[in-house]
Length: 201
Ligand SMILES: Cc1ncc(COP(=O)(O)O)c(C=O)c1O
Image (tube, protein in one colour):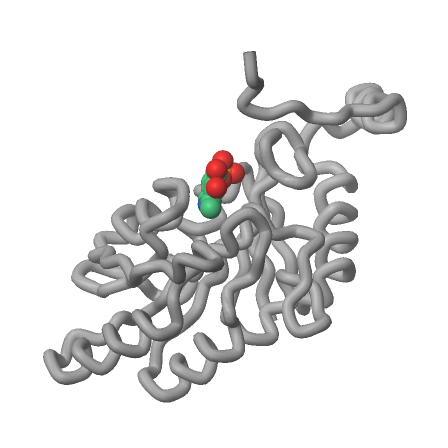
């Protein structure tokens, strides 16, 4: 049988978990801020917040940029449902930008065409959630340029993307976005069993 995912847990990982279990804090102890600091520095971001999973990180990201009833947010149609559901949790509406058949990431040409039409109809998105499928970054500079032209916010769904780079800098730096989200679910690059994080400038 082909497994859905296969994690690699070594003795050091097991020892770290046992150390926490034998410490005074099973929750809200020093490990979470330590993890946040490590990730913040690894990603060259200004802030990092650990969450229970990427689904909740995406939800918080939408709340923090003010997505509310009736707001429109666009994302990629090839992703896990969480990339779109986070908008629905806030009462917003979701629409999808077609993908580039070479990268399977959001197509910049399709995004540009859709923005031109949306402007004519006076229905521009409040935010865009590009998804870095399989850890390959979207063309963030171009999405960022378009955000300045059309006035939308950017949340990077980098659930698959920790350890990747774009333009010589780590995914998660938020150089070309407002917030980046990672997942630490067992089928992702690194795992905390379940877990996620938000990274901000
Ligand atoms: C692109 C993408 N976004 C979000 C998620 C949600 O991650 P989590 O399971 O940590 O909530 C996943 C999980 O598969 C994903 O692949």
